[in-house]
Image 1 (tube, rainbow, N blue to C red):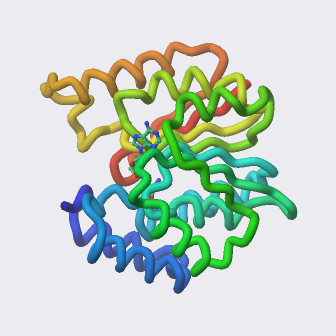
Image 2 (cartoon, rainbow, N blue to C red):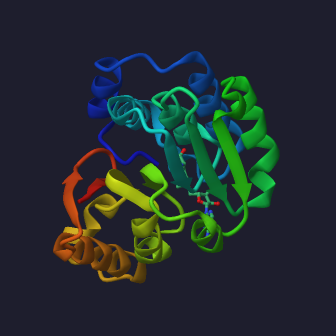
Amino acid sequence: MEILDLNLQNYLDNHCDAEPEALQTINRETYVKVLKPHMLSGHYQGRLLSMLSKMMQPERILEIGTYTGYSAICLAEGLAENGVLDTIEANAEMEPLIRKNFELAKTGDKIRLHMGEALPRILKFEDNLFNFVFIDADKKNNINYFESVIPKVKPAGLIIIDNVLWKGKVYGEANDADTQNIRKLNDLVAKDTRVEKLILPVRDGILLIRKK
Ligand SMILES: C[S@@+](CC[C@H](N)C(=O)[O-])C[C@H]1O[C@@H](n2cnc3c(N)ncnc32)[C@H](O)[C@@H]1O
C-alpha cells in the first residue's frame, strides 16, 4: 500500500541522500518477510529523521514503536558522541529481527531495545532526560504518549508524532475511531501552550513539536 503517488515518491527518493546499504537491506527484507511493511518509515522519511537528528545532535533519543528497527537506525545516525537511543516495542515476535537489524547496521551500544508495553516503560524514565522523541506506535495511545513524554523531554527538545494526517482522513468527512483519535490529538497539541507545533505534510503527516 502506497501512501504517496508513486511518481512523487520516486522523485523525492531520487533527490535526497541515498539510503545507506544496511537500511536498503532492512527495507527490502521488511517488505518480503514482515506483515504490514508500510509501517516502516522508508527511504525519504528516514532521511528526514536522520537529518533532524543530525541538526539536533541529541544525547538522548526515545522512540516509541520499533517495528523492524529502521527509524531507530536513522535517528541514531545523529546522536552526539556517547549518545544513546532507547526504543520500545511491544511485539515480542519482532525481537530477533530487530536485534539482527541493529547488528547489521552496527549500532553497537548506541541503541537500547526495551521489549514490552510502551506506557509503563516511558513512566520509568527520569524527567528532563530526552532531547528528541519519536512517537510511532499504536495510534489510539498517541495522546497518552504525548502527555507522558512531555515531562521526560528537556526544554527545547523535539517530539515527533507520525501519521497525523491519516491519509487525509483527518481533514475529510471520515469519522471512524482512529480518525477521531488523531483529530483529537492534533486539536489538543494545537492548543497546548507548553509547546510550539507544526504539521509537515511528509508521507502520512509528521507533527513536529518543540517543548518551550
Ligand atoms: C508504525 S510501526 C513503527 C515503525 C517504525 N518506527 C519505523 O518507522 O520503521 C508501530 C510499532 O509499534 C508497536 N506497538 C504497538 N503498540 C505498542 C505498544 N502499546 N507499546 C509498544 N509498542 C507498540 C507495533 O508492534 C509496531 O511494531
